[in-house]
Image (cartoon, rainbow, N blue to C red; front, side):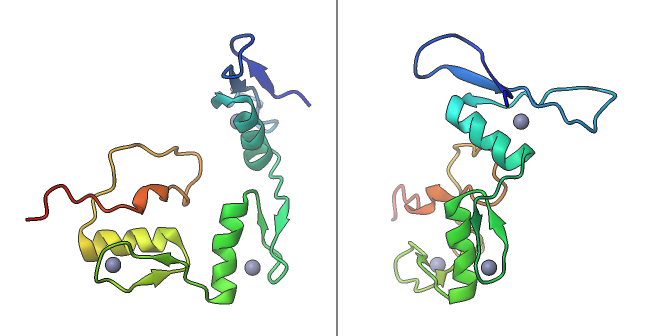
Length: 138
Ligand SMILES: [Zn+2]
Ligand SMILES: [Zn+2]
Ligand SMILES: [Zn+2]
């Protein structure tokens, strides 16, 4: 299968574009156009278009394209809450970084960093939450 095409030749940082066309979209025939590094385009095609989910939860059978999503999901079975609120004097822990993020926003008025997250992965874009931004804590 060839659904990725190099935009510029050579170099390890070459950009690739996803040329996937939805077979059901017989009118527009628009290709997806997702652009990234080769391995990311490949992963994008597998998870978005082919829906390959190599990791399966052996408890409930849900499939996951990425290990991070899977381990977050497993916390819902195990009750683990490894994601601790980084604010001092706050003991809150969470099984899901997205929940921790929501907690930080509602409880601590946390302002997410300006860095835009890739819109590609819905819920797991919260890796930047480990350090609360304290500029000057008067
Ligand atoms: Zn695509
Ligand atoms: Zn499960
Ligand atoms: Zn907290």
